[in-house]
Every structure is written in structure tokens, then in C-alpha cells.
Image (tube, one colour):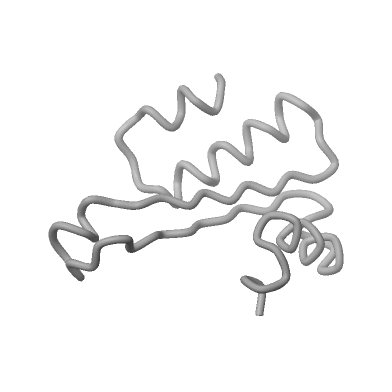
Length: 86
């Protein structure tokens, strides 16, 4: 199953992030996988907190990105840059 197929199903963002990470490990046999999903949800902007521009971020780390803090910090810095990681 491809990650884009997973993202089209109705589901919670946390579960989707985990499923994509697991698929990448299984299909690629990767030593490390980092999946970060950043999304705007209409339930946050229309209902709930009613804050336009609200963003929900979820992440899933597998393999060396889960086991090695230095590797995890490096990949998160590459994704978000120094400023956002503070």
C-alpha cells in the first residue's frame, strides 16, 4: 500500500502518521524512518478553538531515528530548521 492511499482514508492524523512510518519501514527495509505530518484541520478553524491558521503536527520515528537522539535531532533540524526547534 502506498502512503498517498493511506492519507485519503478518513482517520485521525496520529494514526495516519504511524501507518505511513510503518509502511516505509516494511516496504523499503529502511534503517531509520522519520515521518512528520503538518496539517490544518477545518475542525480547528471552524469549530473548536476557532483559530484560523491552526496547525497540528504529528511525528513518528522508527529505527535509528527513534533509538539515536542525535540522529533524531538532526533530521528534525533539517525538516524545521534551527529556529523552529528551540
